[in-house]
Image (tube, rainbow, N blue to C red; front, side, top):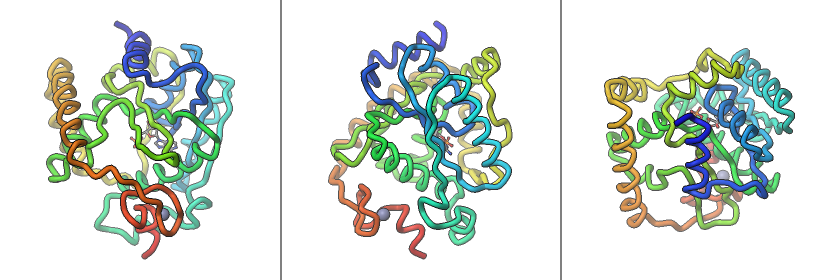
Length: 265
Ligand code: AMP
Ligand code: ZN
């Protein structure tokens, strides 16, 4: 089955999005989110893009150019936000101030905070991301190895929280292998940023990725099913109470959200 049909099937099975909703696709400049936007547009969804410029010099400029080009080509609107302006801090400085944390973890916290806040302000019904099968398996596995299975409590193609300040996040590529996305991007000449972020420091993920390289697609799909079942069990043990951050007012599990914790120092 081709990738477009698989995505259609996932959208239908999990009721991810519908054509009446306001859908915002989080575009990084990479192949995964680029392919996601391209296919959703082809399937007739009325989408807009959102891009966060993380202020990582030439790399961020290249990402933004690619995203702007794609949105122009598809004829869709694009909302661009600058991490530095939104958080009043330079990302690079926060990364330097937190050497014990991986730069990708720090960036992830900021991206999530901005994406949720801005999509809500834009009155989006759903945020779509380009997370795919390999990403998801790696993250679940890493959380288990770190002894933090609760971080995988909301594993699955749709992420809903019982709180009006959270915008629902969906992952139409959840069951698609990275290889297939790469091929699709190449065949359809979707422009993507090839280089990786100069601040990327994900040694742990690189090791986990190596492990999954040896695993067949059939085995990976089985693991995905097992992880989905496991996540349901983890969910039942988790406190789902959401607070609002005492500093920024955004939803958080703790009194102060992760983004505010990071910039407090
Ligand atoms: P990553 O965490 O970098 O693997 O990205 C996962 C997904 O998050 C991507 O497929 C995008 O949908 C979204 N994303 C990552 N970086 C950005 C960004 N700078 N702006 C908007 N969305 C992003
Ligand atoms: Zn906060």
